[in-house]
Length: 85
Image (cartoon, rainbow, N blue to C red; front, side):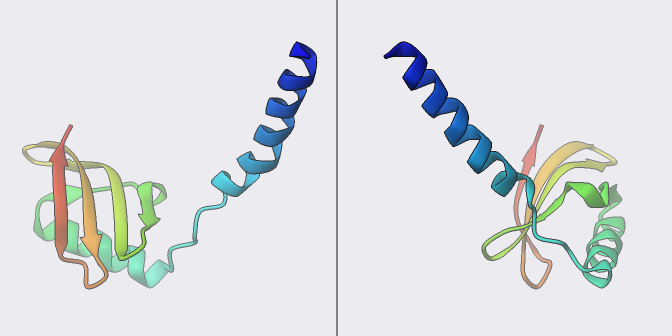
C-alpha cells in the first residue's frame, strides 16, 4: 500500500512538473517596454524574472536604488503592487 501511494505521488508529480515549467513567452518589445519603465524608476530586472500574469506581469527580484522588490504590473505597465523583500 505504501509503495503504491509513493508511486502515485511520483507519477502525478512527473506529469504536472512539465506544465509548471512552461512559462508564457514575453515578447521582446514588451520586455523592452518593461525594462524602460523600470529604468525611469531607477530599477532593473532580469528579463527571465518577468512572468505574464492574469491581468499583467509579475516581476521577481527587481533591484532598485532603494532595495529589492517583487512587483505586479497592470497590462498598461503601471505598478499595481510593489513589495519590498
